[in-house]
Length: 226
Ligand code: ADP
Ligand code: ADP
Image (cartoon, rainbow, N blue to C red; front, top):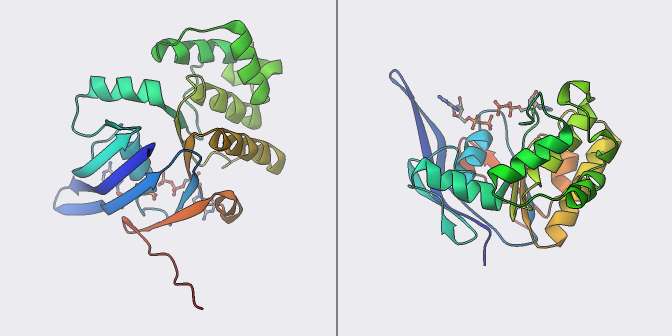
């Protein structure tokens, strides 16, 4: 069954007399194994879509379901619970806690997700993400590429079924970006679903499919001419 199901999402923003339609009827489905890129110009609704899929924002219309569990129109505590069990989030400027080491950040994420932690498992995770050698370092001691890899380890700390990534390769050099993409592909191949937002056409072309947003709508795919 689907890991992410978004049905007819609408999101309005009001500012004074202005109303912005950030999402107007967005529907999408990700099955286990899907690696999907979301692209579109600035202001097309990408961030709003990710926030709605994560349950960080409530759509004004429509429904988000994660692995059969409805996320929309539930109290924030329920959404936070579902999020911590099923979802990993990877942002360019990651949610690493500054005074904790990389390893302690993974421990913290697991505590929030109510998972038992285990030093050997963490070491293996940090190794896969290419950051094991820096496990004891704090975020301020890390380079940009190291921060991105540490952020990925934290996003994967609860072994989530669904990973939402906002510009996961945004500020990275090519080899670090390729490494992160390979890891995301590996996750998809073992049955998780990954949705990533990107401006980079090369990154988008490594996905199984591309969803293009424009003015809060999904652009129809170009017709294939015979
Ligand atoms: P937001 O959705 O938060 O308004 P954008 O989607 O405009 O932000 O941009 C997200 C990130 O991508 C930013 O770091 C921005 O600098 C970068 N970015 C924006 N447009 C482009 C582009 N055309 N090519 C490469 N990077 C871009
Ligand atoms: P993208 O990520 O593709 O750049 P966003 O989802 O950030 O697009 O924004 C979609 C539209 O919603 C834009 O027109 C933006 O200005 C508007 N918007 C986003 N967040 C807010 C907000 N908090 N208040 C008002 N308007 C917003």
